[in-house]
Length: 186
Image (cartoon, rainbow, N blue to C red):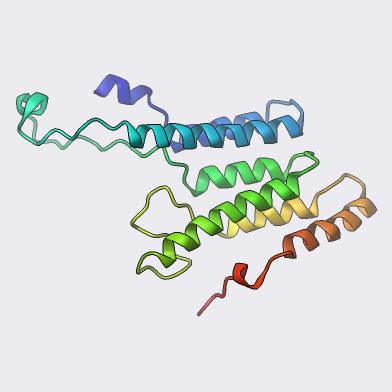
């Protein structure tokens, strides 16, 4: 119904909430945790919505038979997080003072990469392209990788500490096996 859809959040609403936490003035570490909590909530809501969809009403039957308008009803946007949502969370984590920001950002990137790889290998799509068969698969983009690298680079406020810890952080980022390497073809 129209009234309910006006109140329904969409991915942009969640992005605004995530960035809102970033600029509340509260502890950066708390903001990073809240951003991840919002992402998890969004995934739970989307999963609930997908599993509890009402049966589709055949056009011309039921309530829709009284609709004399030629306009098609707008399809509601999926609640599954898109790349903007994941990048907002990665951005908040990477700019935070959370002691595990490198691990958290890398884990979130790995989640995106693994889901994208599995979806691409189980379909006829080219690896690296977003599979069209599953709307809840989000492939990382350049901004995703940049946010993780930022988390590694900005580990503390001291310049020498930043260099020393940044090097350790980038080493953690490099701890991948051969299966994790993505080759780019021209």
